[in-house]
Every structure is written in C-alpha cells, then in structure tokens.
Image (cartoon, rainbow, N blue to C red):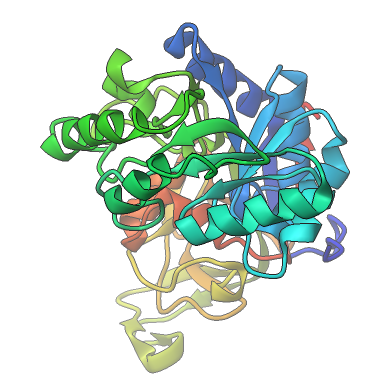
Length: 368
C-alpha cells in the first residue's frame, strides 16, 4: 500500500463519506425487497479504498463481496477475516488456484477450463470448494457460452468437489431501461441457468436493480451506485454523493490583456484576469480534455489553458479580490459539481473518474 501524504503535504484532499456509502446500501436493499445485496469493491473500491468501504458495508450487514482479481480477494480476506463470501469475477488464472483456495475465495467460473481447474484444485485439497458459474447471456465478455453450458449440463461429474453457491450473468445495457437487450439477456439467462444445478441466482448490477422485479432474483451486486454514481442516467440520482475532491491553491496572479496561458498557448487573456494555479493534474487522474471548472463558495471558476501533469490554471475573476490565497482549497467534486457532472464535462463515465484517482491525495474518511 502506498503511504498517503499528510494533509499539510498533499496537493489535494479526497474525502470519502462512509456514512453515505452505508445509506446507499440501505436504499438499494429497501428497493430490492427480499433479495440480498452484495458489495462490489473491485479496483480498490472503485478507487476509494476497498478495505474501508468493505468494513463500512459489513457494519451494515453486507456479507458478500465481489472483486475482479485473486490478489484483490486475498487482500480483502486478510482485512475482513473468515466471515464474508468473497467472489472473484475474473475467475482464477492458471497457477493461482492454490492461493485462491487458501484464502477461501469463491471464483466466478467463466469457462469449462476454469471449472475443470477448480474441480482439480478441490480434489487435491480433499474438500469441497465454493464457486459461482457465470453464463454469457449476450454481453460476449465473460461467462460460459451456451454450448459450454450444454456441455457442463451433460457431464454428471462437472461439479464434483465444487459447492455451487451462485449462478450469475451480467447485463450489457442496464443503464438503458428501454433497450430490448435487457429482456433478451434475462430470457437467455433463464433458459441456460435451468440446465445447471439449483443455486442462488444473480443478474442485477447497480442499474439492473432499477429495471424491476424480474431482474432482481436472489442477489444483486451493485458497485457504482454504492459510490454515488447515478444508476438511472437521465433521471434524478437516487443515491447520496460519497466523494468530495478539493485541490490546494499554489499561486495566484493577475494577467494582462493578450497574455498566453499554459502549454501550447491555447488560451489568451482578453482584458484583464485574475488566475490561480491549483495542485492537481492528470497525474492525479484528472482528465486532460473537457470544459471543466473548480468551485468556491458556489462560484464557478473555469479552467483556462491545458491541464498539466501536476497543476491546472483557473480563472478566479468572479471571486472578490483577495478571497483566495496560497493553501486554500477549491472544490473539484462536491456539492457544486458531482462525479457524473465531471464525467460528462470530460467525455467519460463516473466509473472512470473514480478509478483514475491517484495516490497523491490526502484521503480522509467521514463517519468511519
């Protein structure tokens, strides 16, 4: 783990509201009625700290987590102890089976080959090992193809030594409720899972939870919604914001008419302008492109010139003279500008905004 800088030494501050994460979990659980709710904490909890997020969710009653890689699962198991179920979405790469079994991880088996390797691992261990099976219902990313499901169903020894604890698939278009691909995938999934041994079923991701009762099954596995990203694009966000990002002012200056700003001199001052340079850049995961801005006291402070590796220049002319000084913080994500707002401005998605955050921030957790 990379040690984080102190508040005084850091150029920017990332605040993660664990209370909001817990409330988002409660809201999703209430919407699902009787279905269980897992927590997806892959990619270091979407960049916000998997251990802290998982502990907060555990305190809320969550007992099932999903990561992407075996290494993430081993780290999470060490942090949480033996209680929760930890699924590994990408399955177990060749050679990592012993490590996965030792950490009591439950791989998501995406192919006949992964199933055979896990079956052999169970034989060598001399005990049953838990696993999920993922069916490719139409996304063509991960999971057993229909022909593989048929082959597994025809093999009476396919699950020897394996405790099948979940059958799952993943929706490609859940954030588009009217897209017919959702229903096509659900029907394909239902037809294929019926050929496998009986087990709890999971289909809904964050947006899938909002598609209605037919998509809920036994377990939902939200990720983005837990972290405040809107699972219902185009409608009001039903989730609480989780993240606040603020950057320190390094320097302020007055710029005269005609002065060029930043790399490539892509911006030139018209009239006069008061500017500030803030300690944040693309090395911290802030995207170079897009008409973004910072905020202070609710006042928009547009970027001028290009985003640099470690700094950004902003126009602070709208603030009272002297309002900003070296060391003050301006908001990049917070009440004035959400994660989804930043994503739209920079031409990406909220997932990428969060998972791009670097290690130079001072991170502080509220309601820990």
